[in-house]
Image (cartoon, rainbow, N blue to C red; front, side, top):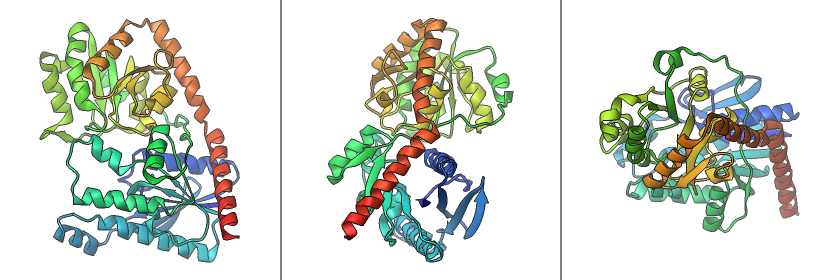
Length: 398
């Protein structure tokens, strides 16, 4: 099958290093290894065709000064960038189809990319997030721009023949919102074959016993809840440290890492923020952590949890934010209630009471759960979904 993957993010773009870009990179490799021909069409700052790790990539220039000016004039009340991006990406797909048709289109839901779908090829849409869920969890008022973004996202979802999501949480929410059937198809995972760089670990963490958070430091990921739970944990465990890795946003006018240090008071010297790190430096930090703490308010089967479990780490995460799909409490990790610092603190205490052998056994069970996400397994499931979309479209055309 010749498959177009249309997305706002991919690993060829310097500004795109999040979960969506990584997912597309893994799934195109899986599709290629299964004998298919994936083609990535990605929003970019230039028009260019290239081969990236053997994958055909078409970069589509979507940055236009006039669009930025209009958004500035309208005080960013309308997400014109979304509209323009969708138009340009779908125009590029039509141009590619004229030379050689696609068997199926695979859209990412983020930024309503499918809104101006013009192709008659069957289309599936993978749900990477839902604007309404993000706005509800972000502790910010919904303005006109947010309402419009939600509308654009819903209209774009109507352009897909089949919808699927990595988590049951998101699938159920979108099904209730749209009245459509949404499948659950977990994301593929395999540990990248990169040589570890121990420099960062040796410089800052060698010999330390620490809990680790990695990902974006913001409200959505539950860092304020963690900030309330940490002081007593550090008080009760004098040799324990806390480490945060990733880009950070401000919280109440203060960088999130500074807010964490303020909250722990006299234990601030045991809170370490190491900034945003590449894969080779991050891997040793994960490998030597006692456990990984991910107290998200909302999530969608996040890569951080999958990655930590793949490393054989115990993950302490929130029940009801999609982690429960991967973690059975007390068996493959530990769960706590969302936005409940007391329950998070109790979960961390349960963790600290585990012996090293108990942690290793739990981590091994976690590793086995992630083996179910091997790219060949998930890739085959996705191809079956593509074929179902093709049959559905054929029936509708008749």
